[in-house]
Length: 126
Image 1 (cartoon, rainbow, N blue to C red):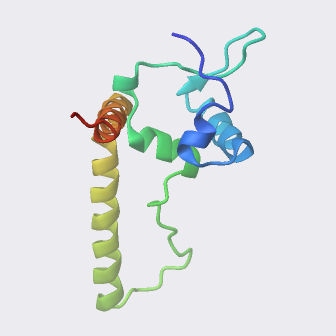
Image 2 (spheres, rainbow, N blue to C red):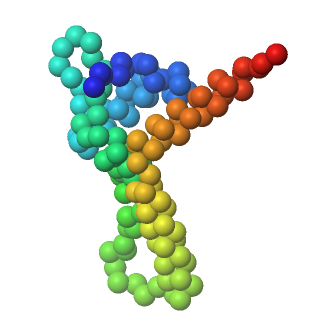
């Protein structure tokens, strides 16, 4: 496919081109994007959009935010702390499971449909 120019998605996403570029750079080592050689520049997906999940992208950009830091000492947690920790771990697991169920290709279809709906809303018939 054709490479998407570096600054093209910035206005659509309302992200500053420099911030977008920094994010795109972090997707390269994760095996999601590559920069094609040559003058045009931009980025290409390394895998089909149906093989990339939102969880893949979030993990590449943010890391595993659910990884809990364990205390180095072996302090026994109170029952309340134990229940609270378990509750948040379950919520984090559900969040990651949801993100892993959403494919980049699905987001592209949804965005295309919404653009078509918005374009249709601007039309009227006499």
